Amino acid sequence: MLNREKGVLVLEDGSVFYGRPFGARKKVFGEVVFSTSMVGYPESLTDPSYRGQILTLTYPIVGNYGVPSCEAGQIPDCFESDGIKAEGLIVHDLCDEPSHWTSGRTLDQWLKDEGIPGLYGIDTRKLTKRLRERGVMKGVLQALGKGEEPDVEGLFDELARSRIEERNLVEEVSIRRPLVYEGRGPTVVLIDCGVKLNIVRNLVRRGIRLVRVPFSATIEEVLSYDPSGVFLSNGPGDPKRCVETIKCMEGLLETDIPIMGICLGNQILALASGGETYKLKYGHRAQNQPVIDLKGGRGYITTQNHGYAIEEDSIQNTPFRASYVNANDKTIEGIAHQEKEIFAVQWHPEASPGPFDTEFLFDRFVESVRRHSNA
Image 1 (cartoon, one colour):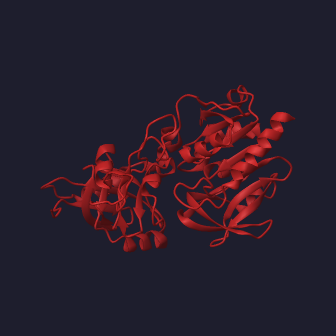
Image 2: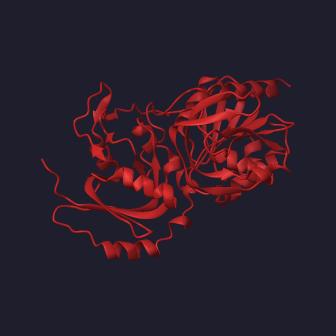
Image 3: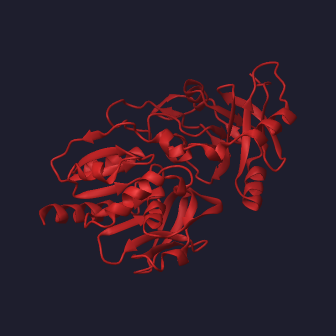
């Protein structure tokens, strides 16, 4: 049946995009971003790093393999968190008859179940070109019900009054109290700024005892677990807003405990050591971002989802040096401590979705943890 309901996206630069609604019928505000990934929408939508953002998928057909039926448990087996974290979804063509053996429901039904609005029939190529030219912008997406008409001028007024940038996104997606994943190996404390569950799976699979703590954990709380390693997770938003986490890392950098960071964790480590970060024009969100290892010159294809980067000159007076760079724009993709077993990368070696080229980084971290526990 032809969907005659209406939906609209307005951007802070005055742009208006009309489409058809799916998912929940509601209005949401957020930073409008795009991802060039061809697959992996269930994982992307449940990635906590998309909190506060309206996600545009550039691949033209979305929903064609449905949404998998996820088995519950301490670590759900197919999503990256306990539910959709993006504020809304924009696609060109929505498939409502998926075909895949794991499919349990349509993308439309999943978004309805989660209370997330979406728009289809949008010229995502035109929208993406605007975001590339002018940078990511605040926007409001409204999915309307039958017989309703969009009030575009009213939406622009609401958008101008919105204070999206004032939300503490990391606090919204971090756990509230510590959670332990038992294992026979040494203890690693994971500081949860919005961790993807495949990071948890990768660490637990390597036999360690993992203690997941809130982003606001103090250094005293972290050290109370007598950890042989500390892991600093990915997460949404501006790293400079993570004041508590930065303070905790400042103290941990004075210890000899091995530390690994991913994405937001990479930026927080730089800030904790005296470096600076800045906002990228439109960020890196894809499964095909090439990075170069500065030590050996080898290239890797990586999954990325971030809107901020480390200022290269700012780490010159810190104990860190750049270890990887993006092959496209030469931004820093990783840093390494010159004296201690501390390193971080800007991309997602755990993938989900995307390539597993750099999963060996988890092995490197766990090996340093085991050495520390035996010292």
